[in-house]
Structures are given as structure tokens and as C-alpha cells.
Amino acid sequence: MLTIGVPREIQPGEQRVAATPETVAKLAATGAAVVVETGAGTAAGHPDDAYAKAGARIAADAATLYGEARLILKVREPLAREVDSFAPDSALVCFLALDRQPDLLERLRARNLTAFAMERIPRTTRAQRMDALSSMSTVAGYKAVLLGATTLGRFFPLLMTAAGTIAPARVFVLGAGVAGLQAIATARRLGAVVEAFDVRPAVREEVQSLGATFVAAELADVASVAAGGYAKAQSQDQEQRTRASIRPHVAQADVVVATANVPGRRAPVLVSADMVREMKPGSVIVDLAAEGGGNCELTRPGETTVAHGITLIGAVNLASTLPFHASQMYARNVLAFAQLLVREGSLKVDFADDILDATCVTHAGQSRLAGAAPAPAVALAATEARS
Ligand code: NAD
Image (cartoon, rainbow, N blue to C red):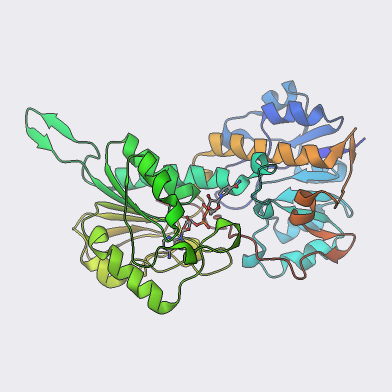
């Protein structure tokens, strides 16, 4: 009988876990045994006894877990010492972020692992329940607005008080993908006046339906959209013209939440150092694109800095700062994926399944990435999230 293992995450600052007691019970229903490393869910609000009640055995340490497990469910890419502890021929499901670690693919191949990258889940209707990138973007978009609100020395909502009327904060969201739309919704719930910009014109209606104003730019047209509905990278000249279009909106914003990304490319620079200088003192930029180079020229990934009186938050791994719900969503995504892989208590890797085919990066001692499209960047980092 297959044993599924859920280790404790050991990347610095990582608080999420790949299975919750809810999903452990459902994993066990696939006919497999489930082993959870002691303490794996503590930071996400799940003590060992909750996993035991759900039907898992608790392993006293990682070595015991890896000695038994042949399907390992994780959140973050494994460190070298983790790869060396996995049993050869076992299967691994997690975010792999191979673009940031050139050696990892070779290490996984050499260990003869069947490794699946959660960031490669195709964005199809059938795969929607497994779309972990969207789950984590939802968390990050929400948390980015909260960080902006707590850093800003102003209220978000319009208030009528005995001390007079307080004007609402102005929030400008750059990039209206999954994270950006959640940022818009969160800022609106807090009462801010919200504007949003994206190069993809198709998002205008979604932005408006959330109660925000869509900022149209000269270059936002259907030609900005690549295959799969993702944005195309702009040329330097196009980026410059985009910056000119959004410049007045950045200048009047109290909080800018920047989420613009193009898969496989450096994040577009939408806010130049000059534009930061034009902002009101005390304003805040929360740059969710920090790890991909940043949407603001002055962003430093993993750091909060102040330039010209503006606080710049180079947000990384925000999903880990909301570990309960980030884990709940990720664990459900991973469960749906594992249900494709485990049949009657055994591992069945069937590459006729387009989801397994698209996500598997190493199998039977071979890399499967030759000719594959680059995966979207994983908004995670080895550094601890700071605010
Ligand atoms: P993403 O993280 O790749 O990028 C975030 C946003 O930045 C995108 O909306 C993109 O258009 C925008 N952007 C890129 N360059 C820009 C620039 N220069 N200026 C302003 N904005 C810029 O995006 P995402 O959240 O992964 O979503 C990408 C697409 O995938 C969207 O069409 C989304 O609706 C779609 N999607 C589909 C599914 C599904 O079908 N299951 C699930 C999630 C997302």
C-alpha cells in the first residue's frame, strides 16, 4: 500500500503545510496510508493530534517520514538535503520554482524522483481545483492591501465624525490578475476609492464589477495578450508610454499595490524612481512583483525601505503570513492533484492525463522539460516575509 508523507516545511519563515486534517482524511480515502511529520501543521493551526484523529500516523522526524513515504506532498521546493533524504523512485508534489534554482531539476532527476511542479498546473477548467498559483495569489493580494493599510498613516474609509469629514484613501492597483482583483476587492471592503490598470483590456469589466475605476492606457489593447490569456511583455518604448499614462494616478495614490507580471519574464517596471518622488509623503507602495524584479524601480525584494518619504514594501511570500487559509487552499489544491495520481492505494502516473503530463518535470531518471513552455513565476522566496 502506498504511503503518502507530509513533512514539516524547513525553508526559513515558511508556515504553510501541504495537508490539513480535512485533506488527510480524504487522502486516506484514496486507499493510501498517510504519515505527517510531527509539528508539520503547528504554524498553520493544526496540532499533531488533529492529524492523528483524521487518520494519519505521526512521524517523529523527517528521516522516519522519508523512510516510509513514496508520495511526498510539500509546499516549497526541497533543499538539497531534503532531496537526498527522499527514497529514490518516490514521487514529489510541491512548488518547484525551477527558474530560481538551476541545480534542482538535475538533483531531482539524479535521485530518480517523479517530481510534479504545482506552478505548472494548466489553467483549464478541469484543473481549476488544483490551481495553487491562483490560491496563493488570492492570499497575497488580500494581505498586500492589509500591509498597505497598516503602514499608511491614514484611514481607508470615508468617515463623517464630530471632528469633521475624513476623505477616503486612494488605492491604485497595477495588474488586475488574480492577486490584483483580490487587492481591489479588499481595498473596496475597507472603503478606499480604488483605481486599477492592466494591459489586458478584457479585465476592465471585472475591475468595474468590483467597484473600482479602470484606468485605460494607450497601449492596453488585444495585442497585449499572449496565448493562455497572459499579458505579453512590452518593449522598453511601450513600457515608457505605459508609465506616462499611469503617472498621474500613481502621483495621487495613497497606496499602490503592484502585481503586474509576465510569465517567464522580468516584471514590468511601471513605477520609476521619478514617479515615486512625485507621490505624496507618507504614501505606500506594496510591490508583490518584488521577486520578479519589482514593478517599482526602487523595490528591494524582502525589504521595506523609505525613499522620498514613500514606504516601499518589497513583499515576498505573503501567502505564508496567512498560514491557516493559505494551507487550507493549497492543501485542497494538492488533494485534487493527488486524487489523479493515487488509484486504489497505488501510485499511477499516466501521462495521457494532460494535467500530469504538464506538471511532471522528472520521471524515470529523465528530465521532461525539453521544449516545454516556461512556468509562471512562483511568488515565494527563500527569505522570510517581512513587512
Ligand atoms: P500574472 O500573475 O501573470 O500577472 C498579473 C497581471 O499583470 C495580469 O493581469 C497581467 O495582464 C498584468 N500585466 C502584465 N504586464 C503588465 C503591464 N505592463 N502593465 C500592467 N499590467 C500588466 O496573472 P495571473 O493572475 O496569473 O492571471 C493571468 C491570466 O490567467 C488572466 O487572464 C487570468 O484570468 C487567467 N487565469 C485563468 C485561470 C483558469 O482558467 N483556471 C485561473 C487563474 C487565472
